[in-house]
View (cartoon, one colour):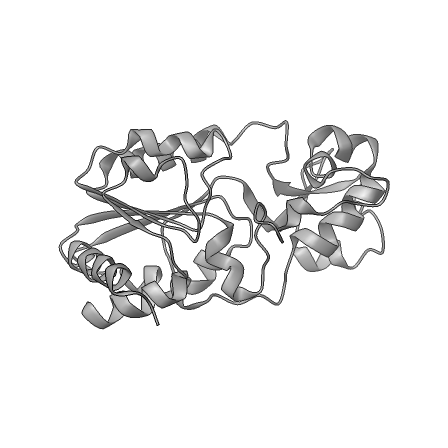
Amino acid sequence: MIEDQTYEKAVRLAEIIKNSKKLCVFTGAGISVPSGIPDFRSAEGLFSEKTPGGYSPEDVVSHDFFIKNPELFYSFYKEKMIYPRAKPNAAHLFFAQLENDSREVTVVTQNIDCLHSDAGSTSVEELHGCARKNYCVKCGEKYDLDYVLGFVSVPVCAKDGCIVRPDVVLYGESLNTQVVCRAINAVRSADTMIIVGTSLRVYPAASFVSYFKGETLALINKSATDYDSAADIVINADIIDIIETIKERI
């Protein structure tokens, strides 16, 4: 049950979505929490933990750490960063179902779980890559997630024996330029932008919000963010509760 004021905001957002022609949905870890994937920056989030050896999670999932200590990297990555059994939840499905002949919907996500595509969204820009995609650092041969999970420790290429790495952006690495350009264009051209489940603290992704010049910026997140003052609608509530309310009005 959501509060009256929150309900009113959800109803208002539903009406805006109904009238939108180009919608950009910008998502973070919070949208996947109902699918059983923990977030990163809450008190119970992934980044509040310590790894064996006392390293911070940010250190372990960095480019330098991957190069220097791939065994510990993969131990942490397999246990904490990938969830092969996770399924799209009502929020992923809702945004996919918004696509129709008169409404264009582009999802720009910071997540690596690929659940937006699983839900059926046809235009998804994965800023930080996809955990299901992997490749040999030497020859570039591509491998799926099952191949990586088939190794007890560090996966190696079947062709040349070199290390296989996930096709995700590690700390210290740059975002893919083409993905960034498409994401910025989606933000810039949208008449409505909905930000879901992100603290907007990870840069440069968080800075993409500044490119929005449309009519309505909505922000749905359990806790406040530094961008709340820039939003037209701010809803601090559970994403599934809000989606259910919006669905009733569309």
